[in-house]
Structures are given as C-alpha cells and as structure tokens.
Image 1 (cartoon, rainbow, N blue to C red):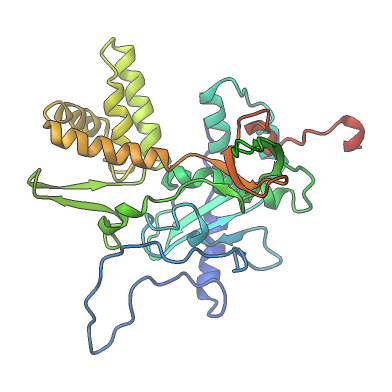
Image 2 (cartoon, rainbow, N blue to C red):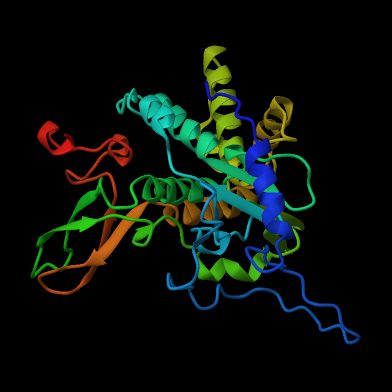
Length: 337
C-alpha cells in the first residue's frame, strides 16, 4: 500500500510561489475581461508544439521542489482543472530503497512502486481549492513523463543513463540504434487531431453532440484513480464468478470523469447500462477509445545514426532497459565505488 504523505510542506511552498508576483505564476487560461466580448471559437488544433528551450522546471534554488510546466506534459495539461500546479522533487534513498524491491514480473507490484514514487515525489493542487490532490489525479498518459522528470532530478549528472535499442524501420537499413531515453524524446501521447473539434475547454473533456444517437457523449482522459477503481471492481466481479466483461472495462476509463466522486455502484450501473447501448452507440464509444489507446503508447523516438530516418519504438522492448532500471543504476560494482 502507498503511504499517506503529509502534503503541507509541498502545498505551503506552492502557496509561497503563488504570492511571488514575478515567478511561477499559473497560467490563466481565461481571456482578459474587456468591454467587447469576443465570440469563443472551438479548439480545433493543438497549435504549434512547444520546444524544450522554454522553462520546463522552475523553482527557488534552495528548495528541492520544482514546478513542472503542465503544458509540456503529454496531455499538455488540457484535462486538468484551470489553476492546476504540479511540484516534483528528486527521489531520495527512502523511495529508491522501496523501488529496489520491485518484482518486474508482477504488474501489480510494478504499479504499486510507481504510485509510491509519484505519491512521495509530487505535490499537486488546484489554485483556490484547499483540497490536496495526489497521483490519483494524474492522467494515465502523463504518469511516465512525470516519472522520467523525477528520474532526471534524481540523476542530474546522468549517472544512470537509460538506453533503448531501436531498430530502424527503413527496409534498406534495419540498423539497431542505441538511443538514450529522456523526457525529451519520450512520446507518451498525442491527441488525434481529428478529435480536437470536440474538445471543451470549459469541461476539460471531449463533448460530442450526436444527431444520429440523439444524445451528447462525453469522453475523459483516464486518470490513475479511475483506472485503479476499475481494476478493483473487475477483481470483485471475477471473485464472484461473474463475467468480467473485457469490452466494458476497456471503454469505461474514458466514460468516468472523477475518481473522487465515482462509487462502486456507479460503475455497476454503467456496466448494466452498457448492455442496452445501441449498436451505433457502442461502435462510436469503441472507436473513440481504440483511437485514444493507440495514441497512448510510451515510445522513444530518435534518428537512425546510419540512414538518418526518424524512428521510434516502445521503451521496454528489444533488450532495452526495464522499469526497475529507472531508479536503480545498472552498473557494475566497481563503477559504483
């Protein structure tokens, strides 16, 4: 189980940064008030991608906590409430010791270790909301990016390089490249451009009115909290000998908005309701979720050193580093002394 960490120190530091007029003020996504109110156009594009020349991490030099620019997350911060602020720090011996006990062959244990580090090394809050948020509020597509940012603070001098073996897909080349993976070349998620017309900045989700279905569908980017609740519910179903309904549990993360207000009975009700969906509604929901799952794979990108073609591959395939290697230096003993 992940321990409950006292959030007061991180939140106090966040408040002090908010009061500093010159540094780390959260971006106000609302347009400035004026006498002439402009008609708001729906978001149709993600716009020009931000470069890493911009300030990605900021914070007072004397503090271990650094503010992470949400706009540079895979989700671009689009699905968090306005005024969201995220602080991160490096992993300390306490976190690394716990991480070292990871059983990489046990997905549940891997998940627990990741949650432990995220819970210990992050502070997340919404400006104006006194309730402290935590790793359960992170979009699933942002988790590895945040983890890699913590890793980079932990090893600022690249004492633990993570190398991935990526084979060039050019049929005339097929060269196996050894690429260093960092947050800069880790591709976690890209919103399919064709869906941007349904993104609602007000609701921070996708709002899809459908004349064909005669209803409005809402889709959310899954959070760690929602994913965890659904896994627990699925285990309950299986323990009772009832059908787990793989199809439902693959789509449900995109249909539930808030893990704090979602109860087991809500999931049960949604599951029953899904059995009465029309074929058109099922196919619409299925298509959305499949398109977004395909866009949510963690891949490392680079350029082939031989033919100079762009390439990418899953970060944990092809004899590359493992999840455990992120915080455990895979060097020989003589290199560590």
